[in-house]
Image 1 (cartoon, rainbow, N blue to C red):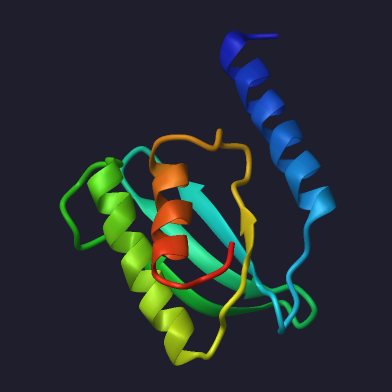
Image 2 (image 1 turned 90 degrees about the vertical axis):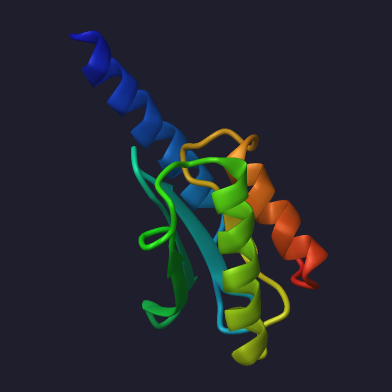
Length: 116
């Protein structure tokens, strides 16, 4: 098996392991993080109904996956959550490690009064 195929297989397995342990409800929805090479996307999902409650993306911001962009996204999603009167979320990091931009998102949410 080629190296890139092994890498994708391991990432899929890590993501499935995380998703097996957490689910979102209307009281405490799931905040899902997705990163591509150019952008970061965040979704707050109610898994009981299967609907996205709030979303934010780094499209339109300067390109890059830096911590500065992640902090701006964290502030943006926190204000949208407060408008929806949601105070707690379950953090779904997916297959990504909890450092860098993923950690910056979680820390910014905590600083803005959202329990993660």
